[in-house]
Image (cartoon, rainbow, N blue to C red):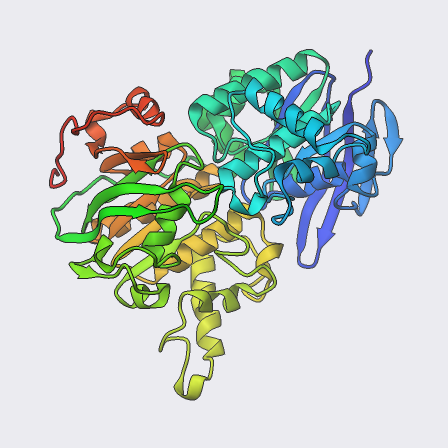
Length: 511
């Protein structure tokens, strides 16, 4: 028999107050696409970091091609033919795409040659990546494409992908799957972490399910249903979304002819954008990553105040020149797409991160004294309400898994009882149970009269949440279309920038 490409035997990893991996075993054959499925905090990412040498296990054995190995760091893992795409990116913001890719390749190749390889590899799955562009100018989705291409250029024998499609559009996902199947056909083994059950069932040969750091089952995904995989993963059926109750409301957020030049030479300029969001409504914004979402979100949140005062209006009041704090006082809250660094300060505790957007009378007393007990209680309430898996509210934000940190950041803004909530990628990297919880909370907020603008690259999510949809492409916004009259094919076509001059039907007041 051919030896397994990767075999893990009784892997155990402990952290203070957390047993991340509890005697986990799995085997991946050459050419196999093997899924690892589990809730946020189930131990998936920790297990993959053990394989890649980024984390040292407390017990157990790693074997590659039948031979026991001690992988002490990622460099040794790469020498063994292991490549990994992390959920939290490992790119240097100040370097270009080509320079970042070069760091993971053997020395001796020129940046120009690496750039040509990047373009060629990206084109294989229909992506356009500029090797000379600095990473800080890329959106989250574009950074993820760079990570994937960098891993593929290493020509690995074992490729680990941690949530690789979380911000890719459906067409790009299909092209990526073609590439992965081609890789598997050459003998490359793939470990695939995803919360998207449909993807796992369509792509993967086998699936190891983790719950609470332990293996709860090894199944063939094609023979399972989404419901049966969910039961293995969370031990229960997925909660049903609440019934949709629409009510007409007043105009809450309006953008009028917003045009902004690109912030840098690699950025996207906004061109005559207009949108309206009413109280009790969710407007979804779809689009390929890097189509203008970032500058639009910056203009709405107040990070970019170059727009004229009248270009952004909140309940009829011009706010285009106001900073984020003054907009929050008027009821506008914001969830950015970047968790670490913008949504949360990595080194600060969850309780301390409350102050990023909740620094008001409820948290700061007379003379500027912090109400520490009150802040901790608020953070604890969010942890409990959104089932954030953490040792406690004094844990550093960077110590949480990506999905659990996302639940905390979204929960922090929902808990603020906003009048208008702008959300980017609300369930990025979040397991199916937690995603259902977040979506239910957003719908409940809408039904309570809040106006929500949701920017997402997951079309299924937008169709599930939104009352109306618009598409952003090349810095332009399509007309709005009611979700009942939209389709995945229509929205997918609009993502290329081809839409009619007038909306098929404009019904912002429809119930």
